[in-house]
Image 1: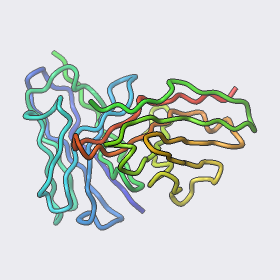
Image 2: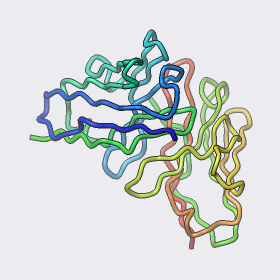
Image 3: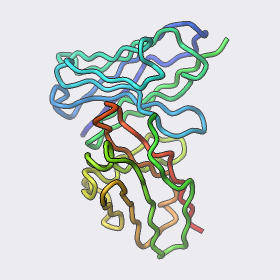
Length: 114
Length: 110
């Protein structure tokens, strides 16, 4: 069974940093592009970033470029999202996902507020 | 930057059929597969349709997807109260190098 478990969400002040993690199991992690998707309270889904199987390609939505960094460790079957210079508008549930195949995590909440 | 066009709401009565549309452009819906996700309140999205018209294991055949040109549709037949959820379409934009989501359609079963 495909499982994705996110962690690392927290309450952080504007301008602060946070690192999200996603632990994968039940599938060959190293064979899939992986994404982070977020959902602000009461809003729709917004794709944030993705990373190729070997980490050689990474893409980001414009609003996080230069502030967020996606990475992965295939040996640990883990996906990461390093977030810095956080803003109030980054407040959301962050999901780890395989966009083209079944498998989303349960999400981890990031709240940016003073 | 990242929005495909969906109707904000749709509705039907039990047993009826409903169709949700998703409109994009040549660089996303027109050139890559469309994916549909179902999300119940307070839960994570679930992949409902992949590669335009394929159903993952466990998804009832009441759900079907189609695509033509720069538009796609999700059809739900034999509506059930349990189908009340938000539905999102998504496609990769090869020009912008981003995944695009639709704004979501809230389905109400009356």
